[in-house]
Amino acid sequence: MDSRLPPLAEDAVGRAMRRLLPFLLLMYVLAFLDRANIGFAQKVLQRDTGLSDTAFAFGAGVFFIGYALFEVPSNLLLHRVGARLWMCRIMVTWGIVSAATAWVSTPTAFYTLRFLLGVAEAGFFPGIVYYLTQWFPQAARGRAIGVFYFGAPLAFIVGGPLSGLLIDMNGTFGLTGWKWLFLVEGFLASAVGVWAFWYLVDKPADARWLPDAQRRALTDAIERDASDAAAHGPADVKAALMDRRVLAYALIYALIQMSVYGVIFFLPQQVASLLGTSVGFKVGLLTAVPWLCAVALTWSVPRRADRRVSHRAWAARLLVLSGLGIAVSGAAGSPLAAMVGLCCAASGFIAAQPLFWTFPTRHLTGAASAGGIALINAIGSLGGFFAPALRAFVDRAFASHAAGLEALGLTSVIAAVLVIVVVPRAGAIASEPAADDTPFEPPAQRVR
Image (cartoon, rainbow, N blue to C red):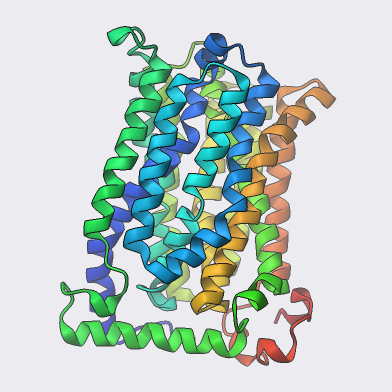
């Protein structure tokens, strides 16, 4: 299969990547920081507010309930009003709510603000994925989403030490360190949200920084992909929300997110335990190591997959690597082996996700794409709600801190198996009948 773009379209893709992706990357870094900073604040937040471990786990996860409930409406609004306006709204509101967490004093307030943070951020991630489909044709989409996914590891490479430093500011101007953490990172999110309104461009046709010929070539390439998806995918939003392949992708994504957030929420405490110390700048530096490995793999694998059109095989391999790494990180007898496991886990589940998103975006277009991507992310995000509870439950049931991590590793392996079963091989979708002809055909029967 020839995955090459015409030279003018390839030049336009390069310009768009250089112009848009660094800014989108900054946005994602801030989003991830505002999701994961409670991992750094956990112990001192619990000490100051009296939150139990169970209450903290529920508060960490309830974010995803608000997030999931408002994903589809938010993404449909983005489709209607454009990314620059809607991304501004999302980032400003989530920054305000995140900063307000500095004044949490009771479990009820903690639950409420975590839920509202999910509501405020709803639509951010699927909105960016949808936005990237408006700018990058299928032949370059793995690369583009892969660069965007640098935001997750970069959030921990940069954000780990930053969060540790903010925690260490305990007592400055009379504020505890965890309050500084929420205030500073919330303010940064709101400031970048205002900047997004002036910086982003909704679609290539509006980009004055692209030469006319490149703008036309890029628009033509994207429209060709959209035409192919329209011929074989759901015809509208309702069809997309009921499409069995879309629902199967949502299940896969939920399993991936269980492994991701089951590790992320507890990573600072896990590393601190390995070092025999408390969370601070030193722990923040060491937590950056797995994410450096993830950056390297996320840079190289999507490019290789785009060239060889082998997204399906690579995604499955990376998810198996992630599952094994998660299990080893809990069962290893030495800190070094546990860190190697964490490096494999982070590299696998971060690098696999940009490959995963090439599957539904090849199958969806237009409003169906906005709704379908949001549904996949919404259902997938529920994995982030269940992951902390699952880990805590399995740990208690087996009286072992390793058992919960092994269970989370298994979810990643199951996701790898489902990728092989559900996702068609490259080129198979084009040979399938239109979705309207076979709306209820099980995905596994359509694999080539």
